[in-house]
Length: 94
Image (cartoon, rainbow, N blue to C red):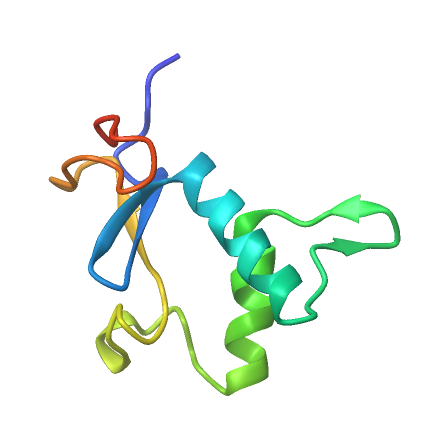
């Protein structure tokens, strides 16, 4: 299956690039540590849903990436971006 140019393939956060899988694991671990929820009514939330909830909680418009730094909140990496290797697993992000 081909990857679309606008498909999210990872996230940039706190000086690291993360593949989707490693980022979800790290984000869920961080949320559990902070007492946050990763499920709603038994449904496991997607990374995008988790990020929407986090952004809402801190009053950030995550779709205006020019308004924040990736040290403060994750930014998406699209397929057509040069993203390098994942800071978690070391695989090339594509």
